[in-house]
Image 1 (cartoon, rainbow, N blue to C red):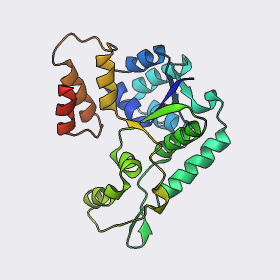
Image 2: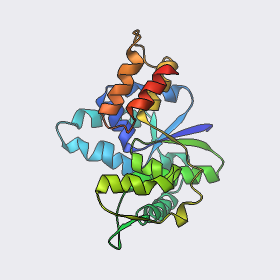
Image 3: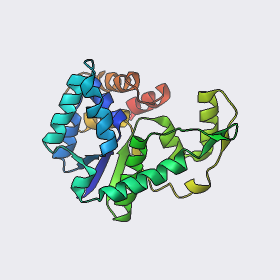
Length: 224
């Protein structure tokens, strides 16, 4: 197991809604292990399976799992008890980092923190990994927690206080978004669209389906 791509729900749903799930098959064929957690499975298969609008996407994602293209973290030999313990640990830290009117504000989901948990466990084992996540809050929390106050003040329209005492050792985590996944996919030839506007169209598509990528970042990627 050389490299592991850990998927949060956002990128899976994004690529599914854009008809780009084959990207995961191409990544798998390159020898990269792709994993999800039970929390993520609930968001991308269990819940949407009961909503007619999203049922087809859920079935396609389930098919990738049944084929072994996307695996559960426990398939890598990780103990479910350790995964759950680490998930709750990071969930507590994250959801106590922002306070308003002397109350903590929940800013992340168990699914997102389960990805952080898996990454932390793999890092301890010396296994290279990266987390695919589109949600800006989680990435800012772990990449630049000092910027979280402004982000959350703008999002919540209230004065907040920030506690980052337990977030001093979070530089171990690496992140990638749907936008960067499709960028790599087209550069590697995983997506065969023979048009000079293909990259631009793909980046726009991920943005409009929920990826937190700015217009400026899209312009930069188009020039790379």
